[in-house]
Amino acid sequence: MSGKLRPVGSRVPLPTSSVMSLPWERYYVAEYTASGTDALAMAVSIAVAGNNRVEQPEVIIPGYGCPDLVAAILALDATPVLVDLLPDTPFMDDTLVRKSITDATVAVVGVGFLGIPERLSLLAEICREKSIFLIEDSAQCFPPFSTEKPLADLVVLSFGRGKPINLMGGGALLYRKNFSGEFRDVLLQFPKLPQPIGWRWYLKRFIFNLLLTRYGFWILEKLPFMDVGRTRFNELKSISRLDLSLSLLYAGIRDYWFRPLPHQRYTRELQFLEQQGWQLLDTRTFGEFGLADSSPRIRFGVLAPDMVTRNKVWEALNSSGIGANALYEVALPYIDGVDQTLIGTDFPVAHDFASRLLTLPCHCDVTDSDITRVVDVLKGESAV
Ligand SMILES: *Cc1c(COP(=O)(O)O)cnc(C)c1O
Image (cartoon, rainbow, N blue to C red; front, top):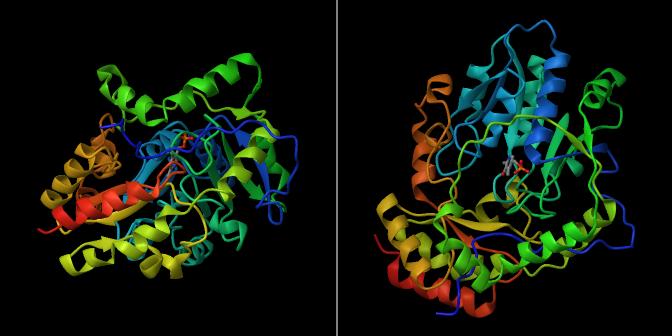
């Protein structure tokens, strides 16, 4: 076997001298942040400031997703309120969203999942009715849905590892051009970190990209202390803005649009799975919700008929050198380090989604023969 194909992650670009317009410039202004989590925490702090009568503010998030959502909310001493999903989708059940809104709710976070934006029109309607903030978490989708249709009050982007544009960290909070100065002042209270692009940065980039290669990743996965691919809850201890290098951001966006689109071949060649009770998270199902066929994906998601079949295929793909994985593996409350007493554990649909999801690599180094191998393994192992 010649190394291992990593599950996710685009290579880090070199800064470019060209200048380009940014996809959100029409409706939004960006404040760059130390990470996507920092951007989300800032979004929550604005929502809290906008509802300043509330004693113990609450923020609504999906019951399946990144534990950083919880960390960002707790960092502001607000309470995360989890909502279960609609079956076989990453979407929050909107009936439950309505039911979860109380006098203390300050915001709903619509979280995009592997390129599929949340149903923001629907959520915007609910939020407008209740006079609370709609935050679009677009860490996994680029460009954010709101850049086309400015439905969200605030939009969160991440430039971390495993995200559409990997700049080895950083993020952005987008706010509307007509946003009140009062809310801008909330942002300015957060310290701004420098981002020097010197020899240390170039060395870090070199090592980072080396670890993305097949041999690099194969070694990385063998190191027990690295715990590769494991999601853990990490407390957010400080919230900072970042003096992001725009030359780096421009390079990241340019490279993003030049990436190959392996998801198109997966979509065509994995249709047979649907006769066996699988479901593809592809444009046939989610195109109408804003999943774009022409945008590169970070991962291609499929739902197995059950957990046993998912685990069997997961193992088979990994033994043939393909870094398929199950992303978070469990519903949000069950992720290592998350305080269940705070958020409850009764999210059966999120639990079901987590137990059947498998993600296939979709990054710039996935070759035609990798896809052929994925399809062959699935043909052999996908039956229940
Ligand atoms: C990764 C991620 C974040 C956090 O972004 P970081 O830059 O890693 O802090 C937030 N929300 C979602 C949906 C994510 O996938």
